[in-house]
Length: 101
Image 1: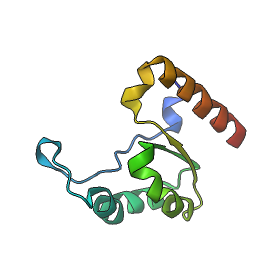
Image 2: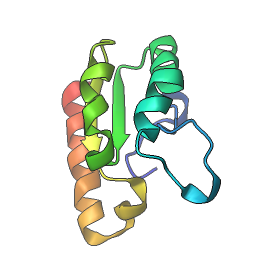
Image 3: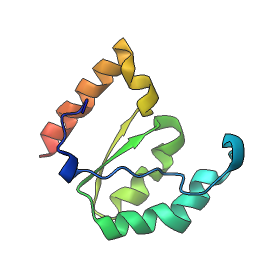
Image 4: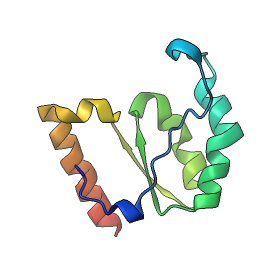
C-alpha cells in the first residue's frame, strides 16, 4: 500500500527461503537459500523489477538478479518504513519505480 502498487502486479518473496529455528541464521544463509530456491523462482516469475529490502545483506545479490534481465532497487527492510526517514525512503523507491515504468 505504501508504494501504491496494484496487488495483482506484485509478488512478495522472502529472500531466505530456508527454515531456521529462532532466527538463528548461519553465515551463508542468504547465499545458500538464493542459490537453492530464490534464483530459480525469480527466473520462473520473470519480474520486471525486484525491490531488495535489506540493503546491507542483500546488495551482493543485485548482479545475479540483474543477470536475469530484471531491474533491482535496493531499499531498507520493510520494518523500518514506518519511521519519518522510512517515509522518505518509500518516496525515493516510488520515484524510482515511476522512472522505470
